[in-house]
Length: 393
Image (cartoon, rainbow, N blue to C red; front, side, top):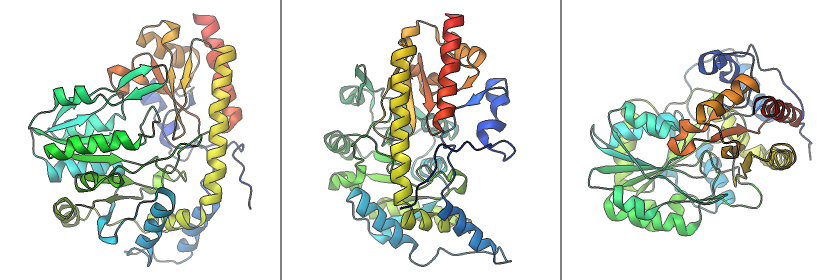
């Protein structure tokens, strides 16, 4: 088996990558170590790059159709990794998962309808519906213990009314990294099905379960879940090819599918560029050894962060993710107001992390750390944070 080098440091500057190019705009400085945007600083696997290079050896970049067997490859991956059999007609290409949320909002709801989200949660869940004239209903997660978050079903009952049309679920959760239990998903399906609410399940981190945890697709847990859901998945996070924009949706309900997919097709949103399907096929047919090695490296990075904070930054508690390469840092032990916390990271430690408050008010006192980087970079970042804490607090 080939060994992949995740310790290799790669200079991304000059590639128009968001992590570096938007530092000045978002943080007010370019002189920061970027650990914010949710892509990894590892080499995109060679088999994916090779697939693109082979296509570029042909001199014409014309209109393309999906390669033969494309949907079979995706269906086989889902069944082998998540034990969910997906019929061919359930699947459709979408031009990105955030865009997919916008497609659902515009095709299946009308202005004034309500969309439920469960903060702290990925901020486009709020931004996209609001930007399209829909009202957001907040159902914050319950923070039971230091590392335990749960869906507040009693709170969901209180805030839900007849105008609620969608609930957007992060599964696995972003930024906390929760792999929701089957019992939780079944209960959520019962609730939403009984009220005619469609669950949009963002499962982009589904192939990145860690430390023995298991991702369970929402639509797979019951017939009611299947009949009231739209599932979004993609290989892009797992195989570090986010710029390829290669995503797909899964809709078991014929009623929802006809309305949603006809709208997508009428607006030509189901036409990928010529590279993303090739990258997806390469990822799902050749990528398992790389994925396993990458996940092992991510787990070691998480353990490194936990150990470093325990020894050097005891006021910062990393909540161990059950999936993904994002770590939710509980910084409340520093006893700083949130603006001062952000200034500590940006102005003193010279680090660019996602500000916890961007995920909702429940994120005050938290920061989201991307550990999908070579360990030497992670060590440097934590050292800068340690120095900043010693000098500023």
